Image: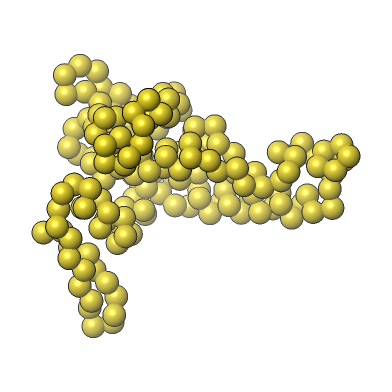
Length: 162
């Protein structure tokens, strides 16, 4: 699978945007600072995300970016493909020329794996990621909030921001 930092950073930045939804437009500088991603790299990614209709830009003072769709409607696979990432595990990039310009013995295996990875990521929305306790703890920490972890009677952990 060819998932590079481009796809990882795009998902991270979109999740950051989702966590700050409702606070007005968020600048790329704010995302860059919180996530440790280069501002110029984010500019490239958000240009692609905007062209694919996943984010909207707001110009002027107080401007920045907002999600173009709800966090429930934005899926990880869409974010990754919007920045021109592929979820292809074949050696040939799907061209069927893996071995001496012909299909290799395991081509179908890797092609099916690619499909399953895409299907998996296409079922996970940004909202789903936002409900994960680990992501909630990190988001709270990045926003300067103190986080406590409680164990309930079942042994499950619950994060709370103070």
